[in-house]
Image (tube, rainbow, N blue to C red; front, side, top):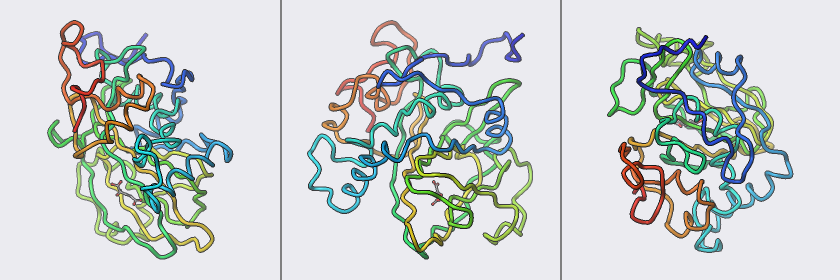
Length: 290
Ligand SMILES: O=C(O)CCC(=O)C(=O)O
């Protein structure tokens, strides 16, 4: 018997079953699902092999250091070879479950939307300390940094998918997470003003891993400590169909070069409930988020 109540307000999303490259969507294990709900984040290790990462890394470095050399239809951080990060089958599995709006999803359209992105190349000693967020369970919709749940189902609002392109070893300086703070009823303890407090959790992972967290959770960047390799990481953000937090989106030429299902990540910010073009299940130039 399903734990989800019969009174329908938000049914779980079961489509699309494949990503834009035709690869079957991969869902979290029960353990990953439990961890994600309880802590507010989960790490999925080694989703891309070293070989698969070669063109992705090359694209990101060009974007960071020699942008003009990219053809116009690839000139965006998640364009060209990096676009596979946007809807990797395991990322779609998580987002189908924690973010998608079921009535706006079908085999040709994702039930969630791309919201914003940045890429960082963090060198030895570079710092991004600045705890923010938390208590998202008490937030209303306009805040977007919200977290909702009922037995057997969660909704994470604005959701961050961090791709670690290089290995992150213990002590290197991956994102710091105040586990459970998305549901916290009390202010975060004073001890968490120190990044060395054991209240902060983090992760270690091989190259090509993702760490996904709800932006309802208190989190922070920190110092990168590894002298042998930079932290090369992509911070993609997703939202539900009718909500957008970050301004802007990729150039039209970049979206035009993507397969149609991936293009639906960039559709306009509305939902609708009608037939055909009355429901926001399609992308075209007139229905593009800006
Ligand atoms: O720099 C980091 O590791 C975390 C970035 C961050 O704070 C965010 O994604 O909101």
